[in-house]
Image 1: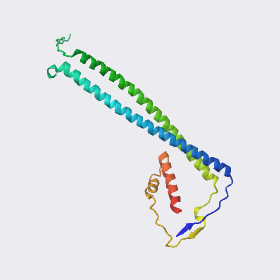
Image 2 (image 1 turned 30 degrees about the vertical axis):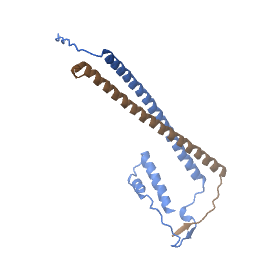
Image 3 (image 1 turned 180 degrees about the vertical axis):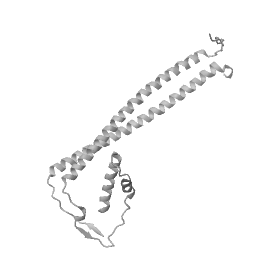
Image 4 (image 1 turned 60 degrees about the horizontal axis):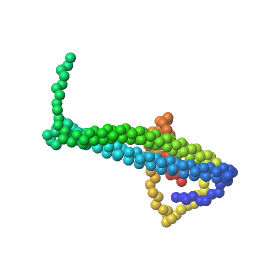
Length: 76
Length: 130
């Protein structure tokens, strides 16, 4: 089995590479920000759906009361 | 002409409550519609953010490629290696071979996913040869 040894490479466009790495770092930060926003929006979406469900249930309950009042008054 | 339905009278002991219930149901229904609009807006916003994320990742890929081409092309096999004795050898965690296999199986060109799988397979092969 062999292990790698240190090597020296000639970097001709050092400035370019440095700039590219900085840009990649910035883009990664942007990607992280985007993901945070997406996660946030997904949370909002889930909360909205939960609220939606609660409202539908409330409507269902009210409708049951109205139905009982109008159609089965003897049960009240 | 169809026969007219006979009227039926129902006594309502709490008419105000019934009226209130009806109005509140209408209010809830409008609230539900409003929520639909809100949800639609959130979905649109999420879609836009997803697109932005995708373009950012694609730009990162381009920049990584540029970085790779900025460095001198060196074949891994050409690098000098040092012999390691049995005592210094460390256990190596198994590399996930599964993905590489998948990339070979789904070699049909065209799909973006296939292309990415192939790229992953190549990178994993390189990592294994290190």
